[in-house]
Length: 540
Ligand code: GLC
Image (cartoon, rainbow, N blue to C red; front, top):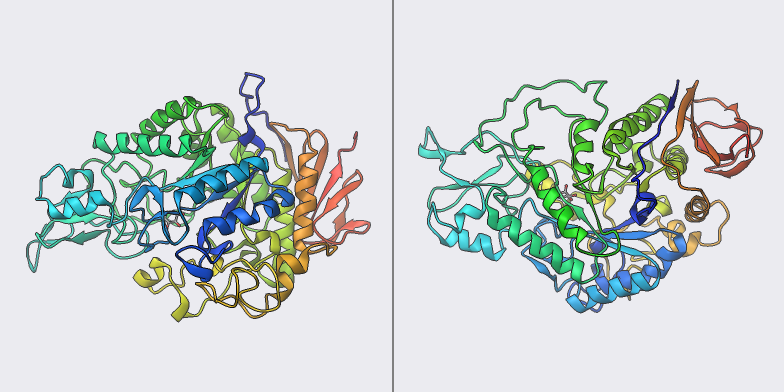
């Protein structure tokens, strides 16, 4: 198979920074602690991040995305915002945020902040006012309060519809006067009613607040969820198996009145106009778990967002054909809207990719190969803190788990990819914070060999591999398309100056033509299994 791809250029001759950027995701609680802010030495904070920015510059990334650091009761670790215009005392102050942005800019790094518009915290002043006000009031109209349905226990005692929370259980909670409110996530995260114009006005102010403070972009949380079908009707509970023709996301629900409504795009058209008021190619990136590549592409039409996370790449199995299908499918869906792609393998919500690919030596070899392949693809790549150290998902003991989904469902949850980063030393806290204070999730005892300190300057370490790959990537000429082919178990991606080859099979494969520039693992005369290489293009 060979598929030429030629995404439309933006036509202006000016190439925005985000089109080719490598963005590094910092999970604020778990990156680095100065020990001087409200969370103490066990919780990451803004000065801790700022002190590590030179490390990120040396790693070779272009931008940092920082997960929510706003005032929050922390029921979902900041994705429950009580004040969008302030910093939680655990993490520091607004002055610390300003300092972080200024330091990043001095080092040539862009800063993307996380915007959480689908829901507020139940401690937001609006929700408190809604609880204090009567049914039918202006205060309640900012959220989705409804009367319940009649049930065996009496009138209004059943939730208004059958929707389930993403974190498990009913998506509705009843308040003392008998009404119910909608929360697609935790009870402490009430959904806003985006059909109410007051909400859009408030978020425009929030965008401008952070743009004025120098934010280069926003990662938009649950971007596909803001507007619900107006009737709030029941969800049709038909299930279907994973369809091979929709590699985007494994969806079990055919009918989704709460996700990906057409009206949500009006919000992003408005935000596009807001960002255009500012210099420097400010951007938004959508976290939109839509069901097809085509629906993802609707978020990045020319007058909407600049990027959307391409979760198809993250969800692909270890298979040359599946990788090829995702790459060609991505370009095919983005070409018509003229958008450039993004790629991501790990984040704070999913099992780390070393572990997804089987863990241990084999999982690490595959993870490095997938990373090297990703970094060779045109477009923007998102890295998640700790992947440059080859960290695996940690099996966090039940008594140490903190994810709200664990409390609602009893399923393991996401804590295992959120364990604080090991920087130095032989034992926890591995330099995460000053002194011996233990971090908010315990670190494994066998991480001494994985610290930044232990891997720095060590030939073949995962950290030095990432540094080399990012440096090599900087030397590439930006392109907007690639040729993708599959030869047996080997995926080939050809761009103008390099060819990328990855062997997803169980046996050595012939090395394609060209000189090896970079490899994810040891390479001789053949391309071993679980290994990727960059080669000079045959004519190069
Ligand atoms: C997004 C975030 C996730 C959070 C959820 C609710 O999916 O990535 O961490 O729990 O939204 O805000």
